[in-house]
Length: 152
Image 1: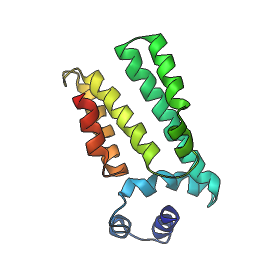
Image 2: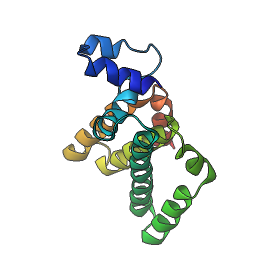
Image 3: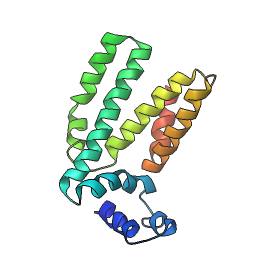
Image 4: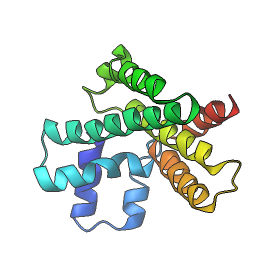
């Protein structure tokens, strides 16, 4: 597991350069998501589940907030329930892959983009920039998913 190997590089005194050059394909934050759970709970299968559960929660809350802003409370509850029980989401929530974090970061960024109101609100514009940055550090295909989502 690359996340565990990356954690060992940092734990054994490897510098920032060693961590950033650990993998040519995987983005740096992909490993970093799991560092806290490995640090507190050790190296086991549950440390990955904890990270994925947090992203699942972020995805459901973000979808709820997007739909609440666009359609209202009833549609928001229905959409949050539908995304939480979608078969592909349930499948990806049982394994440590980057597709669920990608979906969660995309949904959060779309919500924050909607809140910016064409970048007139400074606070939400800064939060959108931070979420966009973390999304790009999560998986390199984030730029395609966010631009497609915002364009629609």
